[in-house]
Length: 158
Image (cartoon, rainbow, N blue to C red; front, side):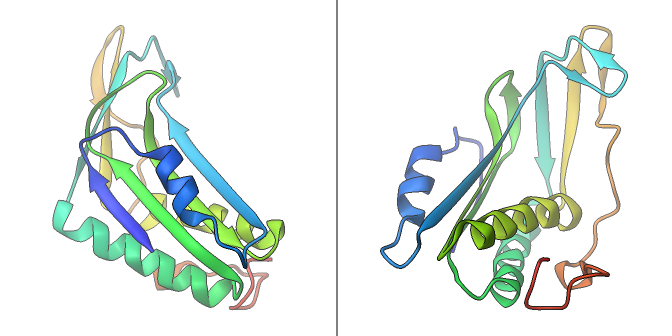
């Protein structure tokens, strides 16, 4: 696994290359980028992320552990997030998952970003044309083992 929190630009190409393995026929890469709007906010110019830094990497690692329990063919998984100011178009988060087949790689990557948003203590402050405020879509932080799917048994992301 490759889990990190950084102030630096995210190494998207390196994360993709690292995830490639001969036993994995699929690599899925998700990159969340800063856009120019948010709910009820237009003209967003940048976002600034803050984190409870000592808790971030352990929680990212817990997501990868859980993803391995859910997706048996998961090869490699990277969960990378930035803190500090991030400009329009720049990546704030990258999730990369490799697996034997595309379905499993997509499932692992989807679980990775959804679990990251729900379980990792990272918050954003949006800067837009009329002001600055914390993101409106914040949710309570939970533990990764509490992220069940009511229709999918453990071992599947179905």
